[in-house]
Length: 627
Image 1 (cartoon, rainbow, N blue to C red):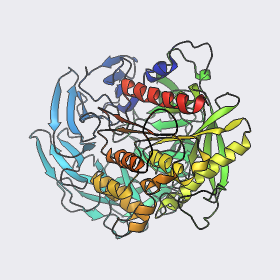
Image 2: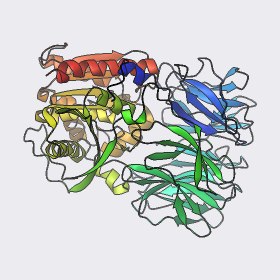
Image 3: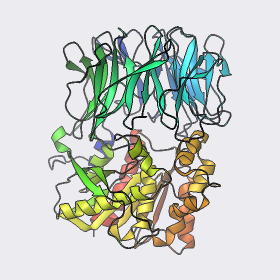
């Protein structure tokens, strides 16, 4: 960070205005998005031609912008998800252009909009009301909600045909936990049929209908790397696109029905690609390396008109901004610039992409669990140099685990750099972007080779940069990254001088019993089977089993309303440490513990981010920086 900045850096970083989930209106004239430029997350609508930004909400939407928004078919109201202080047990509300708020769907469990019908009368929802996540049809004129699927495993990824008569969706009826198939059914739930796209055990998904409703844009990873294709509903055949060189996933048809938009992953960048369906040729969008994503997340329109689409673009040093990309000229204009407050892009640390050869077993001798040799794999990583000499190091494994770290602006990374820490992020085996087989390296080995990758990469970067201080190394992560923080502290305690485990997993059987049903089947059963099937694996790979190995200050932080990773995970580890004779406090080699009220599985709210930043910085200052 620039030494010329004399403000409270943590507060200034926390209060940088952030946009989320931009979604183009049905007529292509406006973009709805969450934006906290007022200091609180609010729903805004941006006029594409004039650039005028209008705030529609006044405190009715969630403080945390985790969940996406969807336009009504008439373009005069926007649907949003509302939960209770971050517990993600959403209900659906609508906010009109006049500022009126209306309750649309209220049900027990989690409710999530899957798609909005063009007829203006139909919503397809996912809900865990009856236990597992299944699909429901909501009739807007009557207010009636009807369950239309009833599968043992989660059903989702639903998209409504242009004529409103059919729904494409994804679920798994195979004996293979890893399998996902695309189905099409009538909008009332009748006549479901499996399109049998891809191999059994592979993962297929439906992403969009063609404008004429005769084809589906689909994704599949039968060939290892993800690919995009067009399924013809009459001939029951698929035409696949791409060379197979990169991981790709489908996004949307363009209005002419002759071109498709696809997202491509390569190394640590992401870029959209447009494919011509007649020639099969594709070209990447001409944007700077970083992460260019098509609109927001979840269902929503990215297409403005025949040749223009909405992009979010970011790099490690440039914050997310909205672009309008012209496919005819391969050029773009900035629609909504990023706000930087007292900072400039050059004040932020850039990311260096590294490659590390790992066999999943680090040189460190002290382990809680021994492993047989693993296959050696090349592991990608991002490294941020704080500029300090010598520099302490924070190892920051990503969550998911089905995710990856990429060259985008990461606020938490820049907070850590502002405190003088260099940061290492590792795309361990199990991460996305490199195909199905790389993801499945983690199956049946949760807490195994991927955690070795984290430790090996840490050792490699300490050896590569002799100005890193090997006596000030910290592991910090959230969600599955929080599990990694716990596990690194018990499996490789000699590597780390402190650890911060945020909303992390500690007891895998308790997680299985108390997480939401679709996380139980889609995450726990897929990666580990059930506790009844694999009791030894559940016990061995639970950090709480090895609590006696903790040998450095550990800070546990957890939101009390977390339903993904329940707060019981932190409480169990805390009790185990107390029973093992560790003392809780802020001095010596004891552990520290903090529960975050009015918060679930992390938060984008400025006040809640600042609270976390201050807790993190205070712990690091006392335990590491001052050594």
